[in-house]
Amino acid sequence: MPKITFRWLFGAMAALVATAALAGGQFTDQLPTYTPLLGTEKFPLDTGFSQGRQPQTIYATVNQMRALMLVAEPGAVTGASVTVPSTGGYYSLDAAGTLAARTYVLPTSPENGTVFHLFSSVIVTALTLTPGGTDTINDPVTAMTAAGSIEFAYNAATGIWYRLQ
Image (cartoon, rainbow, N blue to C red; front, side, top):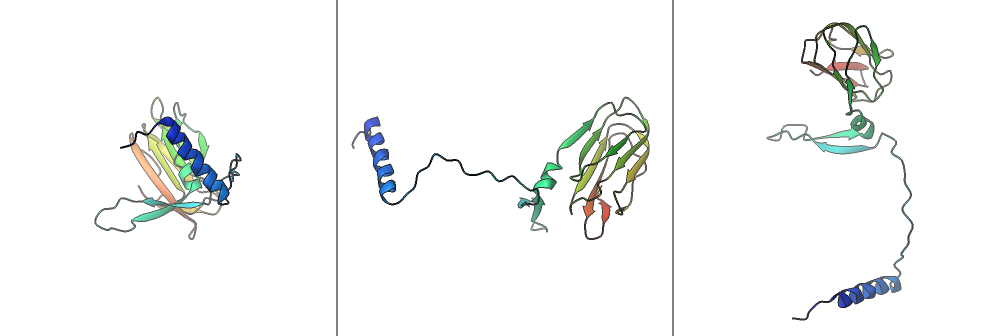
């Protein structure tokens, strides 16, 4: 069995490059041009549902994935109003004690499937969810318990935020 040396390996690589160049291959030191994401590109996500339950695959846009970022609200104060961006998001509400009032204004022109999720470590006595524009909220929540969680998803065809949790 022949012994493979560094010199032999380097020679084989040089021969391969020369062959590719003679065969019309093109080598360049230029990087491909960068095209920024628009946010509407879709890619498949596996739901992981067992036993063939549907849907097995869902499609999410880049904007929907950006919305998965968690917005922490430590030291939240009573009476404050938070405007949720068009990408929705996950909000973690944390305060020193019970909040008498808190308002969240949902986006005015969300994309279909946009999600708004709120976790609260404290009691919120009066919670106000305000839809953006002419949209409506199905089954709005008016208060939250400590360690509570709510979630809404937007349906663009109906203009309604549907409560999921």
